[in-house]
Amino acid sequence: MEERTAICARGLTKRFGDFEAVRAIDFTVAEGEAFGFLGPNGAGKTTTMRMIQCASPRSGGDLRVFGMDPATRPREIKALLGIVPQENNLDPDLTGRENLVSYARYFGISKAGAEERVEDLLGFMQVREKADVVIESLSGGMRRRLILARALVNDPRILILDEPTTGLDPQARHQIWEKLRALQAEGRTIVLTSHYMEEAERLCDRLVIMDEGRILARGAPADLVRTRIGRHVIETEPTDAVRACLGRHGIRYEEGGGSIQIPVDDPAAVSKLLLDACGAIRLSTRPATLEDVFLSFTGRRLRE
Amino acid sequence: MSRGNLSRLAWAVWRRNLEVFLKTWRVNLLTPAVEPVLYLLALGFGVGSYISEIDGVPYVCFIAPALVAISVMNASFFECTYGSYVRMYYQKTFDAIVATPVSIEEVIAGEILWGATRSLISASLMLPILVLFGVVALPSSLLLIPFAFAAGLLFASIGMCFTSIIPNIESINYPAFLFITPMFLFSGTFFPLELLPAPLQALALAALPLAHVVNVCRALTLMTGWGLLALGLAWIAVVTPPVFLVALRLMRRRLVV
Image: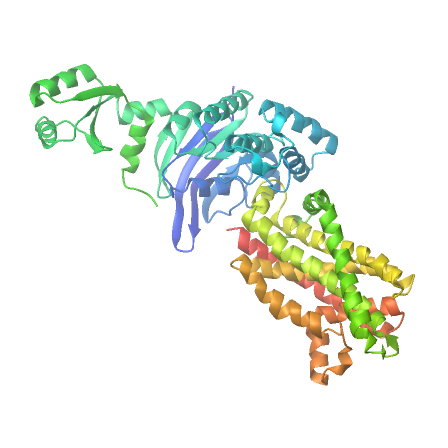
């Protein structure tokens, strides 16, 4: 099947006054794939989403959504998008069902068509029994599901989700993931931002890691882990003796979070070397994860 | 702003506000109906018993149209300041709507149309009461209802201009006390404009929208003063469109960054 381009950015830039929030980034999202933007707070993920969804005009570079320019054809682009914003902005003056019905009206969907579609979506997102309750009395997970249902009201070709599961409990999070996979299986393109590595690893076919407005790495999650870190990580105690020993043997390591991490492809051999050469130290081996990749690119400095 | 940014979708925004309004219709319909009765009793019959007539008109009949005008002003101005600010800033309703094909201009136009509708509702609720008290002429006073919508568009647009520039909700007090309250008192509402010194009279007619709205309302309920009615309608027709467009422009500047 021929791969079509859903979103294409070249040199995409956003400035707020003197501050450059997004610095000439390039990316292409193919139709039907799940594409992730990973990065710490302030990386420029949300700003990028807002440019795609025609909410924020770009300052430079080029951006196309299904070949259309957000600067000149926002109405047509927005008709094809389903937006799940970071901040819950369900209408608190309305119930869940009314939220969806009034949203359908903004897309020019007829009343009869809207009511049928809303019923389907309430069922699909499993929010029907609470559909006539005011938003205020709903749980976080329920609100998130309603927002996702709202984003689907226009049968969008691209779903844009800005931190879809932040603040949810594991049950609610898994439920959202399950729905997103089902939506992708229907052929929809999914673009999401996250700082949950597990979420990105599970959902994204491809992703980019952003920091300070730039893309630092890109690829399929498994490829990124393999090429940047390796298959495994050995963790050991952060003592001077261990550091000295690792240094003597020229073994590359990272330190942080209360341990020393050594990325390796052959954990058995390196463990043996460490135990033989560095003495009786405690160590454990685990599979390398996207989090290792993320931290290796973005560092451990805290972000405001 | 390009003309392509305004379409019928503005009415979808208006419709959202109407639905929310109807959910709590009891309180929404009761308050605008109670206020004029209180004013009529206190000022019309209380204060009015010391004032026989103004320009040959009983005092209560003199203030009745002004009460309609004030209510028209308050309904739309405060809907498009407090109401719109809460929807914009606290509830993020505008953000949610502009993620759909609706443009920011349509959101603001819908809000202004809704503000004008609030004015129309207020006038419609007051009119039967004024008729009951026998202080307005019929059928000319029925024209207050469509006129309330037109005047409401003006006050809603003015309110929206303030909403687009204020840094926080408390700042609505500036226009409320420095613009609305003086207008409430000095627009020929409770005493004739002619009692003001000539320069102030000229200033009122040049700069106070309520002065014109009062003149139009008074002409309709007293069946006199047609020259002032024509002037008022012309003033409102000339001033409203630019203020409306400025509100759209300022709101885009505030919200699209």
